Image (cartoon, rainbow, N blue to C red; front, side, top):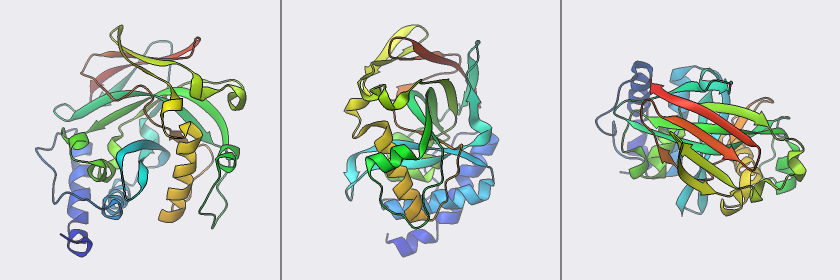
Length: 264
């Protein structure tokens, strides 16, 4: 199916995902022909954002492996209603029962300035200059479609990038000089070690994720706003979770953030 034929399905696919998310219900399968081209996938995402009509408080960035047409990252919206600050008692984050559910330890970058209008390419340094804070956090990856991660990056993009929430932990002091790429990160589920990693192993690191997002949003004609968050990618991997699980993400020697998992 070419892009012209796929365009006729965009509205139906987008509405199906929005309806399933609002109802907290799983989908038995992909609600249409699987997108293959990134442009088709983002067309569905754009349509779903318009249908949802919710305020966007940030964007998740994930890896495409292997790359598609030379593109090695993807993005999806994080709605303000799904962004919460970590508290002393772990906050409960929703996932879709019967769908896909995972948690990821991520560095969260806060946009401090609007990228210059008309600028479509950014250096690493230019991207860093648009960030005013970096926090530790957990991304909740969840979709009504259980097989979303098995069907390719374009399918992931089409359902809001498989995002269903963000837990914002503590700010990192002097993040520009903190050598974040070398910090050891780990995730524990119910106290059991589940994954470890360093951002140095993630393409060009958290600021590289911001650079990618600034360029992608310029190409899509989407204006970013100060205060929006960038969830920069899963450092330790994508960890499947179940209702009732307690998630702890540890960053370096001193910082950690926790949440629990509940039904959407």
